[in-house]
Image (cartoon, rainbow, N blue to C red; front, side, top):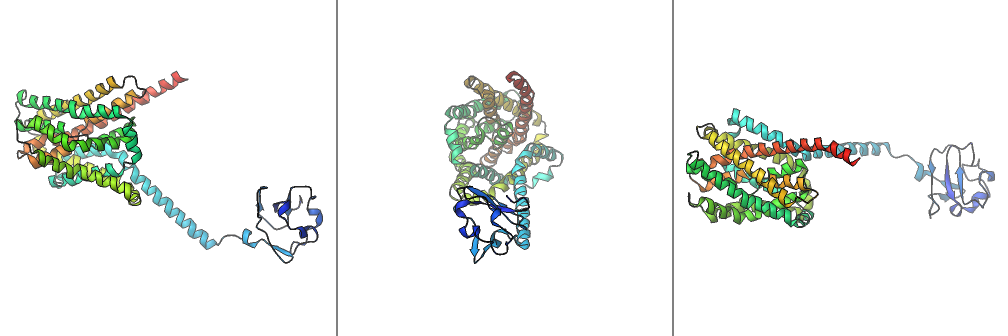
Amino acid sequence: MNPNAVGGVWLPKATFPTSVFRRPIGPFSSFSRKTFPSAKTEPFFLSFPGLHETMHRSRELKFLPLIRKGNSLNFSNHFEHDNPGEAQVTTAQGVKQRKFNEFLSILKRANSVIPHVVLASTILALLWPPSFTWFTTRYYAPALGFLMFAVGINSSPRDFVEAVRRPDVIAVGYIGQFIIKPILGYIFGNLAVSLFGLPNSLGVGIMLVSCVSGAQLSNYATFFDGSAIGSSKHCYDIFVNFHSLFVTPTLSLLLIGKKLPVDVLGMMYSIMQIVVAPIVAGLLLNRFLPRVCTAIQPFVPPLSVFVTALCVGSPLAININSVISSFGLAVLLLIFGFHVSAFVAGYSLSGLVFRQASEAKALQRTISYETGMQSSLLALALANRFFQDPLVGVPPAISVALMSLMGFSLVMLWSKQQQQQQPQLNVRHT
């Protein structure tokens, strides 16, 4: 190697022209034969003044980008600098793309504020009802349909496979939602009439809440909790909501039919429109138009948060007079007792079934959310459409806000417990 060289090129012996060893080459006439090592050396270093680039090539190289022209070698195509104007355009495009990606990331993280939004909506609806009264009952069905559509586009075939692989979890969830919860609703609905002396319509409203499937908010609770079902939770909700097409009208007929007339076929048609059709549309969009689905997915979380805020605050604001009436506190206590019982029942049932599982606690929390958090907005939409007495809608209106606050309170409580237990587990492991 020439110690005075400031740049150079490593060349395999077989790829360098033979004439280079015989005489100087073009403008690099300062080269001498002494610059090159003996022919026995496999790779050697070509050096020349003024070159500020160094190229390294392995023995496997079949082509070295040196083009011989006459008595000189042309290096210009491989060592010239890029066009400064093109570099500036590329840099500007990169900055724009990075900012756009950051914007999409912010949109996707919008779900993280949902507990605060629920609390703020509840307080605002109680303190200033006109802030939500414009969102009338006719908007409930489209709003719930959008939330179901969001469940569909966020579900993938892989999630369905994971969900089907856990039939025990699905079975326990079904028992909690469609057996235990309706029994609790029937008990508390009768207590409202027999013990508290409330009108039958209020008892029917409590029973109607117990007949609907799990809420979209339980997905958020499971997401924040980091429970075991994970992404397949969306598919579990899809299974449950599909079956609610038949189960909810049937349960309503069994629990409420003796007190008030129930339009079973009408309920099935409404659930088909509000719940099933939007989920199917989201699944089909995700399956056959993945690019469109990918384009709109970043905007779904902030819209879902906004719609959820309206769905929590509006029922409470519209029924504010009933909430603060003489029977409002009794209904509040009954709804609170119903949800507490459902949370405890789901947690206890899953604890008995999965007591030997390594992830028992996580499964208990997940089933507890599913059993304790109902789609009370669907119950309210059904109450407004199929029952003439407006009092039937009061328990679902209270339940929308109350069960949301209770669910996210459990998320924070259990998360704090996990954080406290984690150092102890690390010490034991050490």
